[in-house]
Length: 216
Image 1 (cartoon, rainbow, N blue to C red):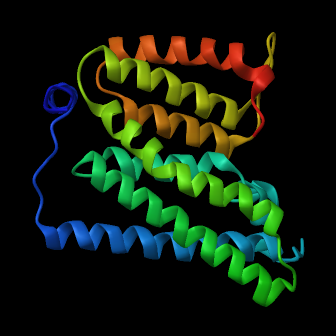
Image 2: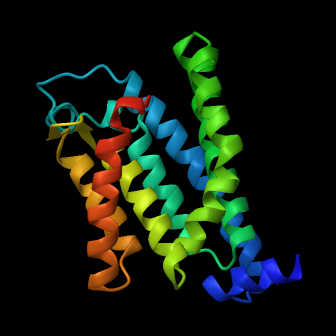
Image 3: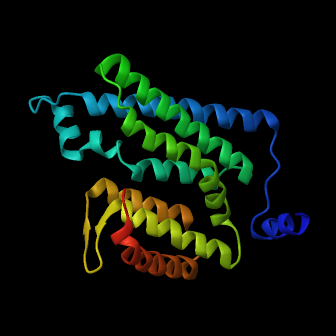
């Protein structure tokens, strides 16, 4: 176990942070999840009127559907994970983000929309349970050596499948917001040009290969 921990430290060394700061970042992640969960459901429930200028903006950007899909949440979770002080802190911060978002979205739907989307929410609760493990993996993406490049490749493949419509012989853009999410994900993972070129090429190739099995 000690040898394994030492190998992990060679990939990326945790940063010592004050307990107070760690608690603060966790609380911010939880509060952010709650706020974004409420906003997401509010956008989803809003009846758009094309005569109102900001309604037209929401209609053009399709924010209601955008916040109900994986891409933007994966980006937020990855940003929180990679910039956490340690892998364990990343796991906790991302878990409370998703827990807050799911709880707020579910309660808002029950209380204000008048129905219980339990089957739909079970998918998100499952993602929430998996999020700590995925956050730990993402945290090591900003490390050094071949392992982070492999992780980067897998992450880019997931973002490509979430942000584009991909088949074995085609790729198409789903919208400008999804393109911005993909570019932002690559920017977060960037360390140097060589690493990014390798990860981007391999990630896109992997996305094409696994697209027939992608269910999200």
